[in-house]
Length: 327
Image (cartoon, rainbow, N blue to C red; front, side):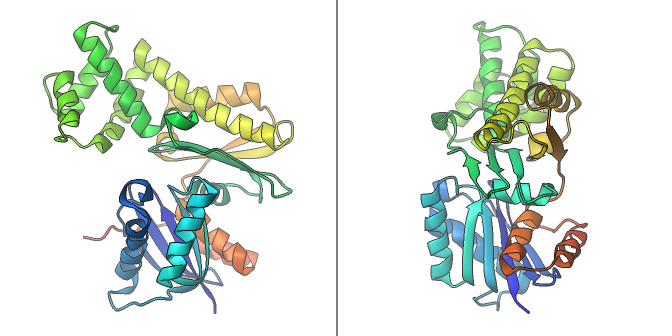
């Protein structure tokens, strides 16, 4: 029986699953974040190998599967997908390899049809749309330089910016100042700034400010609410524009929402997103999925093998328990 090595590579973790053609999950593993932009392509692919060995044992040797379905962060452009695919092929991890952006896995995991739109708002923000014809609408998703705004890291930067200005008088008072001090355990916002500047505080910790931001917005803080409203605008515009590009704006279609910021189901952010889609894409049905993206990667791999529908059902049923991280 043929096998699929599914890979969900995110900024904070990399999940893998070895799946048989009938949908049986043979092994699962987890490794550190998949960050080819900062670590380089070879180091990013090393992470996949480490996660596989954690799942299969240190004695495991490639090829690990007949088909590798890798849907990862950092594959934002076709040239990046090609570079990652070539590296995986060079390592011999699988006999066939498909690499795509992780938004495609989110769409496959959450949509009931083979087409639709997926918007992910986790550490960053991105979206992809697939039409019934197979046409694709996507974004470069390279951060502010490609017109993106928000996601957990971007929101954290905004919290810091407003907190600093509230502290020194350049901006209005906001609950975000105390939220920042509490999160980092400092007496001032300036201490956080200096810690980040000198490398004593990891920039990734800014992502952890999102829960405090959402709480402050619900409590009526005007600055916090403005950020949450803008995030809702961005989640909406990315999906609506993808629908428009594909000529799907007026037809029934699912918009799958994923990523930690959205799957937290904050009542204010969720309501704002729902209101905006109802006004701008009334034919769309929003689907907030808690199914892990690794399921979507595995399903895309099974699709590639031409596996039957029963295999997809068996696969989904297997992902009811979280995988533990390596010690």
